[in-house]
Length: 340
Image (cartoon, rainbow, N blue to C red; front, side, top):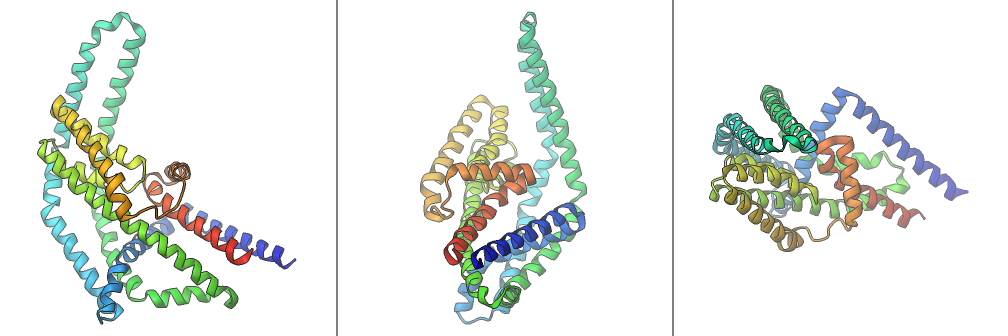
């Protein structure tokens, strides 16, 4: 009887949390606030291992948090000063790159014109041409919309370091206050569960971010050496996509390969070869040393999580799909261990 009551209680708690998540998902204002808090929490969580090392040297948590956040702001300012002008310069040339792509498509299209007698091939080529033409127009519109939203995003970005600071400075207080919400008997178990999550998730997040930086740097070196257009934009794009396991490296490589082939057939082939070699080195040498098998999840389960994340939340959904899966997996395993 007692066991059944515990199970019912756990189910009710789970349903309550699902309901809260659903309300947040449907409310635009709440979604924006939760998004800012979530990003700030990820930043703080990623920086906490560094903070712990500084605290071990003798500094208190507040001062160490302030030092790290100020240093992070300085790094962002340096990034804006050094890298952003290059990105903007490349961004201004994106329309010329798109025109170049369209011209290449037109050349291919013209080559297939003699096949007009074959109606099936003609219809297929006509549809491909229209789809690519529409895609190019959509990319330009999205870039324009993104430029208009920069002001709003900058205002949001200004709040993130402040929230991150308080997460880092008062992490112990926040943690203890959160534990108060649970019954006294369950607090030790909840603490153990959170520590297990922290152990696995911390390694995964820091590892994925480090791998993305490495991939971004080497992608830039490859594209710059091959004289492919937009090396900064393409390397940043590849770094971002690389956060997503399995699918990310493919999504990130496609734009670079396309721009490589626009440069020349030789550049396109070399881009494919070098990016493939980079992914082989990352997957077989760098990744095992940085993250290991930190999530301990079957590849098929990871792929299913990524597909679900993509359907629910798009690109952001795919990024957080694996961490959410890890959290659910650890909670399930620990609840089975402690309660049943």
